[in-house]
View 1: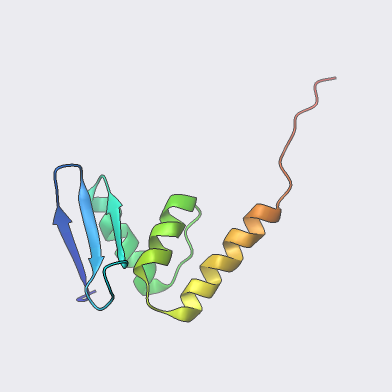
View 2: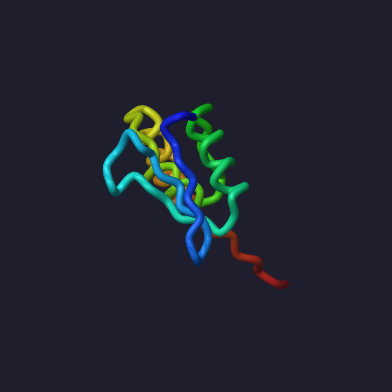
Amino acid sequence: MDNFKIIQDSRGYILINTDGEYKNHAHSKKQSTCEMLIRLIVKRIVPKSSYLRNSCLRLTLDDDYKDKIERKQVKDRQKPAYFYIKK
C-alpha cells in the first residue's frame, strides 16, 4: 500500500502508483473509491464493474493480475445479451 498516492484535484481524486510510470494512474470522484481500488489491487481481486476493472488494469504492475482482468473482460464480451421477448 506504500506505493500508492492519492491526490485531490479540482475534479476529484487521482490515484497514482508511484512504482510505475506516468501511465499508471487513475481518476476517481471519491476518495473511498481510490481506497477500494488499492484494496482490490493488493488482494488481487477482479472487480465486477468495467470502470473499476480498467482502473485496476492501469494501476497494477503485476502481469498475472493483468491477465486475470483481461480474461474477465474477454469473457464478458462473449456473454450473450439478454433479450426479453414479450408474448
